[in-house]
Every structure is written in structure tokens, then in C-alpha cells.
Length: 562
Image (cartoon, rainbow, N blue to C red):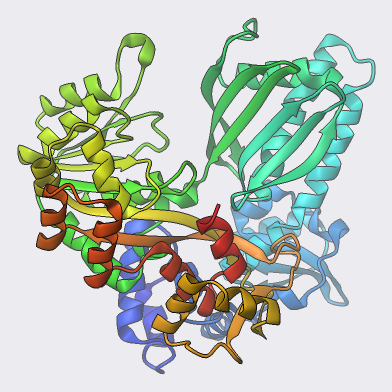
């Protein structure tokens, strides 16, 4: 495939298919995030995947294959094991009169082609497929993994020797992890009850029941997970936290493990720490241009505080990591104190909170200040002591990044006052507050437009706040208003959604906002002043994203009004 940005630019910018400014921004973000430029261009809807695939194939002198138009035959697909398919970037789709149709992201790789022909033992007809096309076909392995998992569970329930049981337990836990990864789960839950063990996945922020397992398997499966996470297998009465790793296509995937005793056994939650989260740039997260300018202005300030707020699971840590990625250069020393350290960042001194060793956020932060840092990241401001040290650090010439639990950006400022921080210190140290939530994105493969329904129109017209927001974004009349939704397809698991994106409100500390903070004004007064200064609320940002087809109105209201 086309490997260089210059070749892509020649294909896309010169003919006028993509604006040069949009291409340049995607190119910069590709370098900082490590994500392929091809994927970024498609994700940002700068060009359709099929159109880009056709152009690249023509440049290579090969045929392009649109995988959405191809029937994937399971018996042909599994001729190439999933691990091999991921490693080579090649999938067997179906049989034709000429041979097995194989889609490759690099069909000019003769070595890979010869390896496939040797493995398959049949004539092979290769086509170019895009990276996104490859990902979509890989989703088809999910069914075979589920079948494999069911077979392993059934085997565990039979009479086995101790060695056979241990071997099968190993394979079963591996299959559960692979199944979760392929299903795009952020968390894997094993929840015991008196009747069964329920395997549940959190996908795009929503829980899904996947399988029911016999209760007789609990001890075997939990023990295996404890061994992998280096936890005590003889401890059943206290909570334990650990970390494990498994491989997908030769690439390691980190998993955070939490085991908690409940009345019916031990509850297991495994958080898959996705590699993709590390690659996100601020643009990818969903920040709009105006908000990006505010955040970058705060980043350029050598001292002060950048606060990211929201409930648990709202993507705060990912946003902080995206900011750190921009700041992480050889000219500065960055130190962090986190609980836990989710991702290791090259060039950053990261400290893990350890309550047993009396290493708390407060004590760790005190020590960090003596390590000559330029930038300090505090995983979370939880108490008055941590807040006080963080503010003092910002006052003494450090740039401090941290997260905080609050409902919205304006509420954050009174929250700091409640933590016994003097108003003048809050006003002089806080640069910007970013409040956020995560909403599910409409699946790009099955997205379709529709005219506003009578129910939606009535709901908006009877809600004065919603009605005003629609009027502000240019829709005083709702008749004929276009919304979008996902019809449901194989790629999104018939949900209509695929992936998540942030909705934000960014509060910049202007002089007028500072005056309100010093006067101990309420969050309502701060909100009015911020809106007068041009701040968009999370609800406004969400509605804008619903109108442009990124998400649905239903999803925005579900997340904002919980």
C-alpha cells in the first residue's frame, strides 16, 4: 500500500479530494498518536474508506476489494488462524473459480503471499483491502471464539484429571480474554450467583450479557485469573488488585484485574487497557476547534492547573494522557502520581499509589515536588491535602494536570473552595477546566439519516432548555430536521453504534470568571458568565454532534441526563 504521506498527499490533496489544511492536521496527529494516516483520514470523514481503497489500489496496480460487498465464508476464514491473519494483515474470505480470495493490506508483499499459498495449499487470488476493511473481517472470528469458549466450558464441566482441568482452564480464560477483545469490550465481568456465573462485557459504555457458565467452574476460573495476575490463590475474603497480559496476533495487551469477595463467591472485573486509547489526540477525542484553542492556550502556559472533570468512566484519564503526549518533550521533566498507572509513557516518571507503603496522592506529590519536575500529573484530587499541595505546586512555577469528580466545569471551582482552597488561589492557579462525558458513535457502516419523529419534536418543544439550544444552533423550526442513527450490522453487532467520542465543555479562566471565584459566586453565576463569554455546554456540544451524524440525540440525552 501507499506508505508515505507524500504519496497520499499526491493522491488526495492534489486532485482536490481533501483540503490541504485538513490533511496537514491529520498528518501531525498521525505522528503524535502513532495511528496510521490512512485510518485517521477515514475516521475523520475526510474521505470514504472505499474511495480511498480504490485510489490506493490503482496506485499499486492491484485490484481493490470492498469487504462490505463480500460474503465471508466461516470455513474459508478459519483456514488462516486469527493470530496469523493479524500478523500478516491478510484474511481468507471465500472461494472463487480462480482460487481462494484473500484480502491483504499489503498485496505487494511477495514473502507474505508465498507464506499464505504454502499454508493454504491452494491457488490464492490476492486483493488490496484497507486497514479498516481488515478490522471488519477480523470481527468474523468472534463467532468461532464463542463456539470455542462454549466447547471449553462444556469440557471443564466433565470429569477431567487435575492436569487436564488446569490445561482447559488456561485455554478457557484465554478464550474469554480474546472474546472480550474482539467484541471491543472495555471491561470483562465474571459475576457469580447461586444458579450460574454470568459473563458480561461492557461495550461502548453499556453492559451486555454474553454467556452463562456453571457455578462449579468458579474456583477453577478465578484461580487461573489469580495466577495470571500474580495474586494470592488462597485468599478469598479480601479484595485483590493485579495486572496480567495476553497476546493478540503477537501483540501484548495489558489487563487490570480486580477481584472482590461477594456473598456468592468472588466477583472478577478485568479492564482491557486498549492500545488505541494511548494513540488518541485531542482532536480524536472530540474537542471542537474553539475548545481546542482554549486547551492549547492553557498547555502553552508554563505554570498553573489544567483540570479534567467528570464521573467515573467518562474518559478523564485518556484526555489527561493526550495532553501529556503534547507536553512530553526532551526539554521538560514530567512526573506523575497515579492510582493505578494504566499506561506506561516513555520519558515520564510515573509513580503508583501504594496505600500499604503509605504512598498516597498527597505524600507522593510532596516527594515529586522535590524531584525537580516541570510538569506534574496527579491522577485524582480526592482530598484537601492533595488539593492544597497541587495548588501550591501550580503557584511555584509548575504546570499541574489532574482530574476531579464534578458534574460540570462551573461546579469544579466551588468544589475546590469546599476543599479549603482560598478563592484567590483558585483564581490565580486554574488555567482551564475541561468537563466531559462519553457518548456512543453511530456505526459508519450502517449510518442512515431520517426526519425528526413526532415524539422527538414534542420532547424538544416541551423542554425549554432543549428548545433554546436548538434555536441557538440555527434550528428555531424543527420541521424537516435531519437526524442520524445506525440500522445495525455485523460490524457493530446490530447495535447501531461503534466506538465512543467525548462531548465537552471547556471553561477558560477569564478575568471576569476570576472575579466571580474571588467573590465566592455560585456555580450558576459562573455558568452564566462562561456562556456569555462563548462557552458551549456539554449538552450543546452533544446536540451539535447529533446533528452532524456523529451520535444520536437519544444517546446524548441518556448520558447527560443520567
